[in-house]
Image 1 (cartoon, helix red, strand yellow):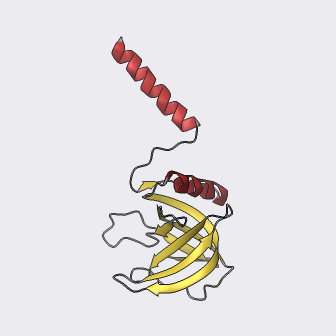
Image 2: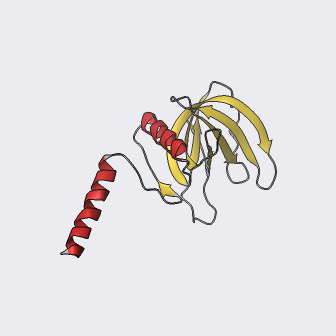
Image 3: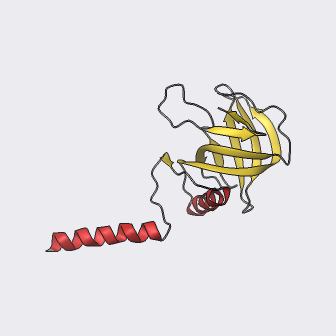
Length: 148
């Protein structure tokens, strides 16, 4: 009887969490959303919960273009702002994927990559294919061109 009650309690807890919109996320869990607004809300929740290691899709407007990071693998870096006001650093590996040429402040950019939490809003990386095919491929999209 106790085992059956425990099973029912676990099932009810899982159903409750699913309907409450709370996700129990593991490292590199994949979360695909149907709209930018859903992606923005998910990213806001991940930031509030200080969670990372989640593959997400979203979009934002470029607010700042930073110098490339040339330590180790080279990364093109820029800041995007989401519709919620949250900002993200995009770190795009240009040793594994083409650089976005002609990127400017004010440009819209879509992304599919792995979110990592930081106090400034977070980082999106893994916006490229994995040569060893161990990680889900990510991408950036700018002016109709996909970079991966």
